[in-house]
Image (cartoon, rainbow, N blue to C red; front, top):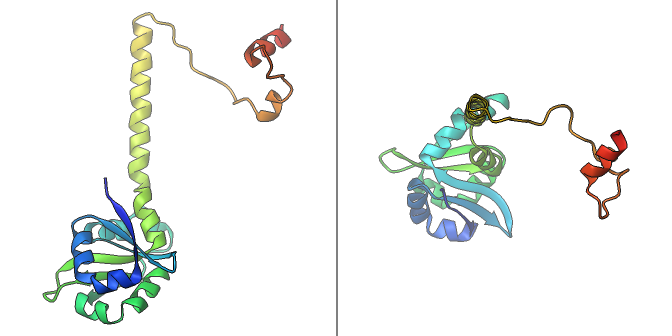
Length: 177
């Protein structure tokens, strides 16, 4: 599990090298100013995932991104954070131009935490297939299997029943007889 820590912008600016190294190791930092979440410092791998995600493509392609050396970012960190909050992505690089971390806006962080929609769809399909195999195995063993069918019961239908001592299901059965 990835840890996420909320930090003040001034603290990150003072110790930018330390926070970039920790982000490179996999931690995520939400950068705040006066309690308002502006941007996030994420690992290089996380930034690649956001840039390549289908959700980003659905929003009209990749946002502009720029390589910035850590020494340059340290001098005007507030401006970079504000631009990241507006949707720009920054690859934070070392003096030898190696990518270490990324500075992204909060929307990109939410996309990253939500995960890839295709991966979620694949997981749901596998779960449905597993449930179907289980149901067939039960039927083959001679166990009667009953799954809910039909439309779900609407709230307004349930409102006409009294949630008193008698169960609602018993009231429905009595009404239908």
